[in-house]
Length: 253
Length: 253
DNA sequence: TAGTGGTCTAGACCACACC
DNA sequence: GTGTGGTCTAGACCACTAG
Image (tube, rainbow over all chains, first blue to last red; front, side, top):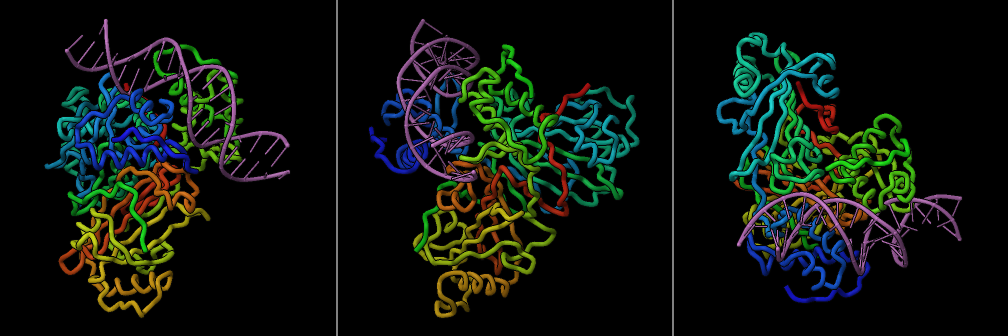
């Protein structure tokens, strides 16, 4: 990575800088390598630190860089492919499900979830927290909302609130016949309570996956999962090893 | 929206500001309404403009706001649900496909795409550009890579490069039996050439969907589609009207 | 304690939309 | 032109990690 000065062009400096850095990453750095610190990089390119940071933010958004306060900026490994949907619909907690149940409490679901479930906004539902780990890092957090009607044989006595209850709820869910499911994926930001677990700062971009599970002619459960957008690639279907296309593709004759 | 001063708390100012603004949007603004300009808002909350902008950026990322240079900041409508996957796999261009072919040229595919297609990096493939419109706005752009082997009956004479060729390639594709497909979704940024069409600035966040189409025992085509992350919610399966959960969910007893 | 990235400020000027 | 959001600067201080 040279001591290149930026020539003046019509595109924003931070964008040009992003391109230059991106190419440097391709050709001169390997995964895990640490970059010079921000003050030094800014000086090298002759821009203000804020401008340099804008370029780094871009590259982080694209999953090319990883920055940690107090540590430094490193070249990120390729994104992890996370199987969100396999061929057949499955209940959460079915055999082979990699999500780890953390705990379970009862409470009111957020309005949109309550509406989907067809329960009153005030009616308590089971709220199950789970997390997904890949390569020793938590990469996703999930809230699973299950109305009492979906697990009729579960009584409060069965298990105290906490991990044990979580497992009971999941076990009871398997007794229902899953008629189908659908999903929606959108961009979101990390929930304040998850920021710590996911090792992210407030506002970090997340891929939010909302899944509805259908049984007995109604929506039997709703899951809202948030995946670290910087490190995850969500896969749907047979796949697993789709290669990513994250550079700007060259144009064509 | 009051003239509230921010009290000092341990969370970053911009984050607290985001929360305050978010609540104001819920209670005091309706879709399409324009907010006071940034300089005024900053003054009102007693912060620097840059700090206010950080909060607005968050809300834009969450799809709550829409900002346009020279115009102002408005309250965004709920995200548009875009069906990415229906029940059965379909070729691009199949009846009912809402994508508009724009043109088609021949060129080399980016390395990862070439690898997936099983062609040499230098071997030209058909590269088809398409766009997707919703509510009069282009919300997604797509590049479809089709190796010559997948459309053997298409000759250069059939159609000149351009929209006509695009339609020919799609027509030829339908002749193959589609054995299956898989997808990957990840966060990306807008390609420089698409920025204009999509009415976005460089670096705007996009949901990138890579689809592989399988036929005759190999990967017969690869599509790389980028959807505006601010305005789109991607749906998979039966759905269509899943309600979004974009506020920070309240925690539970 | 030293060094990193994260937050914040108070300015300036630019690009663009609309009148 | 006027007003908007977008870019950029040159500083300061804070929060965190690691030696």
